[in-house]
Image 1: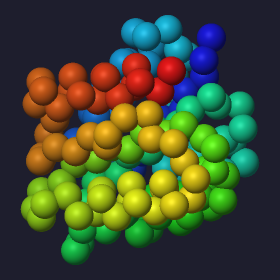
Image 2: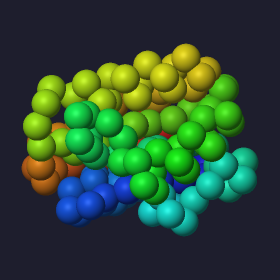
Image 3: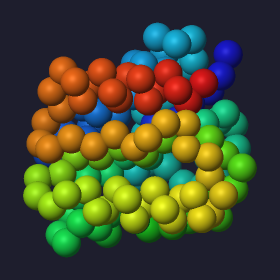
Amino acid sequence: MKQIAVVYWSGTGNTEAMAEAVAQGARDAGAKASLFPAVGFDASMMDPYDALAFGCPAMGSESLEAGEFEPMFERCRTKLSGRTIGLFGSYGWGDGEWMRSWEESCVADGAALAADPVICCGAPDEEAAGACAALGAALL
C-alpha cells in the first residue's frame, strides 16, 4: 500500500479542507494517507512516504505563509529531487502567482508533479474539492 503525506498550513480552514480532500482522494484510490499541519512535519519525516502533497494559501503579496510553512518547506526542498509531489492552496486575491512560483521552484528542485496544482478562491466548492481528490489519487 502506498504511503502519502499531506502537509498543510491553514489560517482560515480553507486549505485544511483542501488537505482533507486530497487525503481522502488518496485513500479512495487505495493509499494510506496521513495529514500533518506544517508545524508537525519536517524533512526528516519524508523518507517513509511514496509521495507528498503540500498545501499553503497565498499570503501577503502572493507568497507562502512565512512563520510556519515556509521554514518547514525550505528544509524539505533539499529532499524533493526525484520525489512525486502535489501542490494545493487557497487564495483570496491575485491570480495564482504564488502557486506558479512555487511550482517552478519545486520542478527546479527535481520534484515530479503528479498533477497540476489545485488552487481555489476562498473555501473549496464542490469542483475544487473534486480537483483535490483527483490530486490525491494522482499521487499514487
